Length: 444
Image (cartoon, rainbow, N blue to C red):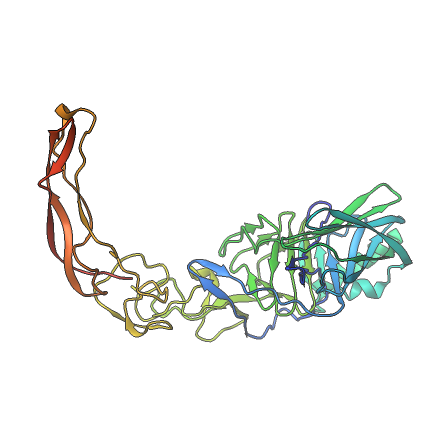
């Protein structure tokens, strides 16, 4: 998504067998304005959303790439076969590039663990860019904004303007193909970069590389991506009650069930960025939801994002503090953001500890306020016996074994001041005594 319209796809190889690609644009076709309500699983830890691993499809995969319509050479699609590879496998690559001049070369630079393999691709076909190819594009950039081609007047107008431009410029498409034998054991993220050059001296590239999920996006306000963003398979994300600018970055929807949502009346500004949509993925102009927030503490009961024009009993995502589920949506004191400690149990639906416990922060465990033993300390000067100080210190904690949540025990509250006395050119402490009292163990 740079001014050069870099489309970043993702290739991950783990333990030499898993080969990940986050895919480019167009392949997924979903109507946008009447989206069904869909639940997508995710794992939430604390205030951080941990998305499930990306499940990669088998066999050959086609990816269509969408970028600004005034940058050339412009990548239109990529084909990779197979997607999952092991060392010594032969991987086939095909890219289609559009240009108003002849494309002179396309090179794949593949980063392995030990070096970069340069694979020149061979020109295997040329042809004119047809009207139907443009009119059938599902995601169109017009005046910098993303338009979903749902057959509406705005979408058809955007497509028609692209057709007229292509006809005026006599745009052509060029197909390049190549193969390489996978080598090295890939234990880190690596990248494959396709570089295209034309006879007018222009150069563009797409880089296939892993990127973090949607940094810089804040619900309820206009946001700009601060890094390339990849939505994994079976994952819903986006922005709720706010507009988003790609900021020159790449937004990649990597496969089946990948959904990126922004609201009606708000904008998704592509600008110099790029959007890549893989098979079974989609962009939706609708709303983001999570389960109900019955106690209105800012933490909804659900743990997965939902999307749709309506959602019965749900809460709009921009009103919630975190996607982590509230394990007791009838008690404002119980939620994932709770930091206070309590000495009485609460009825919760914690999946770990049962119906009645002290899991106020929904961690799935009873976290004790004080878990260690207390005691007294004496600090003395040891360099000069004439400067011995009378000091008493203590370490807060239990005098005996720590009690369970809500149970009283003997607690070290203080220590009497001991005395430091000179002896044999050193100072020694004496007379320090624990001051104890009863305390009830707090937990959250």
